[in-house]
Image: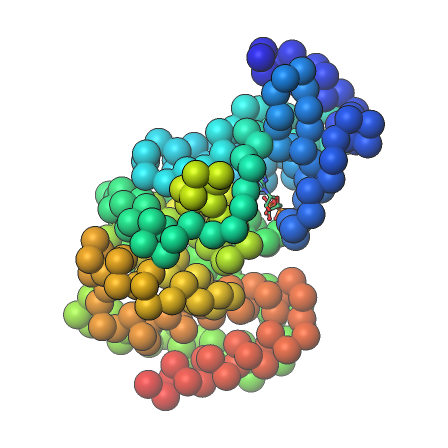
Length: 287
Ligand code: ADP
């Protein structure tokens, strides 16, 4: 298959999608389709043309994970723009169920052993539909403070959340070092958005992850996200620990890492997430 030709074929992605594609449900952000092109089955996501960079960043993340040779991700064939639509075209993987906790743990631990010299990533990306900054830094605590928590707190302020939440969040940012007294994380390759909806298994039972928001950071951030909207279970953690020890301070930092995602949910969806973020901050401050 000549993927440049496919680019030509995808002129008017929406029309192609309506006529020759089956919508795929389950995503939050984009329209997604299973598209038959010749004898090739592809997975195509589309969105507004202005969001092309989001797909390019997704591609960079999937390619970084693929290059780590540790866990299966879809191969990306093409990103581009036609008319008013941006698209990403990738391998369609027949997904079903879950990989065994042991296989998932083994693959993720191996991925987390792929490290960079610094924290960050080659490009910014998005978390949900919120921009996520990944400017490289030598200092993980500074990275988490500036590019994760303070970024979301500024958004929350702009979105009109009450001053109590913002003030408490800023106070927490001032004492972040306290959570890292005896702990120096490595800059592990992270999926970055590893909730249950972004992981599955292929027909052979191999774990598959997709829709990443990659950066190099503390491996605990991926583990925490898995616990926020799911429960990987003790079998997963036991197998993971055998390959990548988890520091005892994780039980505190877990909330620190998940606070970022809860703040992001507050900014995206409102509802009870603001109150949840406030409770998390108060708990962390009382530690
Ligand atoms: P969004 O960017 O909108 O969140 P996702 O990338 O999460 O969309 O994809 C939506 C759903 O499509 C996923 O929950 C998953 O079930 C399925 N999916 C994702 N990638 C593939 C793929 N490469 N092949 C087949 N199905 C996929």
